[in-house]
Figure 1 (cartoon, rainbow over the protein chains, first blue to last red):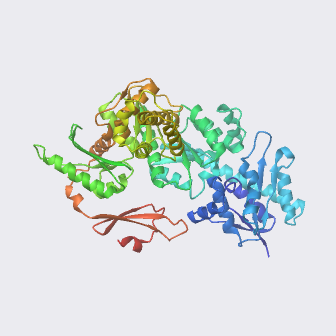
Figure 2 (figure 1 turned 45 degrees about the vertical axis):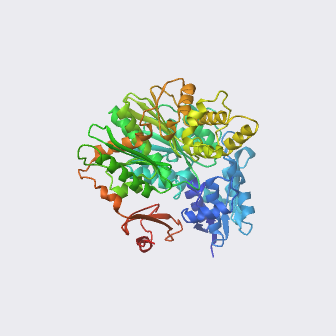
Length: 305
Length: 316
């Protein structure tokens, strides 16, 4: 019987989803993903979290919890950095230990990714595969295949988005962490509201990540959170192709609080608003802010036409 | 009509967009009753005019805009930022900056060439809004309407931190216990509202004159004066500064008019709401059902159309 690996559909799933699924399938495992985020999961996750934890971390715990008993191991990787000035939020460093302590009954598997400590991506996945009893060659072939699948999927999303930039409608760049933008419970309803009002949402993570990290330097030279670099870089790349920018943040995210403030102060030639999401976020407050912003963007277009 | 969290405002405009009837009442947590009572008073004021008046369009804004919009079959249902901008521009076409402080929201609207180009709004908390002032007034045992004049009598305003209502309260209690007079405390609160507003909403924004200050809190002259002191610009407070949202909603309705005459008897129907938690899926949406004479008119709060219709159709 195939080993069942549970993958929480939260956090970096929205960055590496295809890679992880392909990797585990290639080494002969069966995948169980959690459901799309819903309110029950958020509430369960919040109950199991300390109250100072950030909204997406609470959601993550809700996803892990829902996988307990449905698989042999739950996959909870630890991401520390991709190099000296390309670090991840501390939350990703502590995630494995948090989950292990909150749900001691769950069997976890994962890896440590910290390029500055010689724990590269290859080494991380090699170790992961070995704990599942696979040979080095199989693991490396699986990883190569998985990376190709992920790259192809990323490429496809970028191309689709490039097409949207050519559209005539009001275009709004959602600049945020991918796990906020694409979460079906917190970010996607916002994107749906944007569409309902006749505007086009564009996503900062559907842009070339390598290019984004480069272009981020135009706005700030010493950011070191890699994922913030990517969303800031998307702003640098596309600020003149969109009508407005929405900075989405989750309460109380430290890196977003700092970096969004920086963007609000430095990006002056295009309308920018920040929307902060929280557990209690009422749809009404969100609708008012969004509707006003889109009204402004429409008026600006009319005035310049 | 501008149905806010604290107060409900209504105006009737003639074709030249001049106010011919107006009313301002407390919402008291019951927007349906507030809208009904407001309609009654507006009808009464119209009855006192020398000519027959036909209302040919209705617009709603404010946090209960949707509810009131359904109740009145409104032609325009618009967010507060746009309504306030439109209202103010009809009176001050040259305005560049609007400060608006209401019951639970504070807004900053920037205008260029008669077009709203940017805005800021308080995020998660209501510190530094009307709710903050009225809770502190209650604490000091004075009416919120008296705060402005009282503050202007102060010679030595107390320094109070207004970043958070909880801190402000402890700050204020501390100052009171150390011997500050009431007017100094109130003056400190009014200044704190302004510093908090400018720190929160004004940061990074260029404030240009003419500056118009409106919303319920604009009726407080000490807050208006503190704005002048902090920004260095004269601050215009219109005699209808509390009605700008309603005026804007009326103008938007005029533009969107569908050509049907509004029937004031809308106020006589029975409206009710009922909220329940939909158990249809794990999202457990809180669905608000809105009924007219016992018949379901609309629902909101549901993320999908699959809410429990049987449950929704029942008024209890």
